[in-house]
Amino acid sequence: MDTIAYDHWFTPAELIALTDRVGAQLAETCDIRSQIGKPYREAWIAARFALMRGAQAVRLIGEKHWQTPDFAIHLDNRYLLFESTEADDPTRLRNQDYLDACHLFLSQADYAVLGPGPVAPDVYAQEIARLVAKKCAKHYARCDGLVLISHAAWIAGMPTPPQVWWEAACAEAQTHFPEVWIFHDRAFQRLFAPDQTPVSVPPATPPPPCRRPRHHRPHG
Image (cartoon, rainbow, N blue to C red; front, side, top):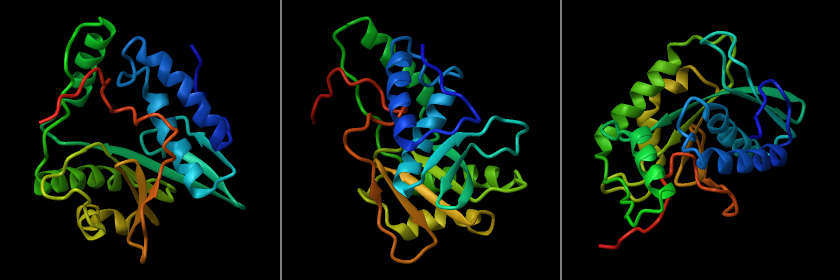
């Protein structure tokens, strides 16, 4: 199996290609959501964030202590450090959902994978605020930004949550991180900055690592 090295600089294209290969290999053993898959999950978002920013290089940062950011990008003449965190419906067991669906998929059983139901906006906002507070409490020696990965595909009553909603949920981050970004519905969006529009991930890339295998999705 290919491996994703920490503390090694890649171009964004190189790391995207590597995560494509590693993701396919991890999917064969249902390890995407496991501890084995942690470098893959971190590299997946880091590579695509670096590409979106137009960075020349990106690397995962090896954990030296719990206050170490997740990845760095080389952007023009600057080296920027970022922490990432994953948010989802707090009532959903995402890792177990993935394992159940993956093992069924590999068994070639005839089954249907149903997408998660809607999460209430206030419930999801509270969960996001809780996760943001945990990152703010770390007191990094240096961290130039936070990237929040939103896995909730269906926020009730909000097909496209407005920027003001995201900013309210991530409010505490504004006083701790120079940059705050969200990744939701395959697009990056910067918060607390005027006139920001989402920047979509190119459609040729694979789905985020939280997605469950799709064998058949019934309608209705």
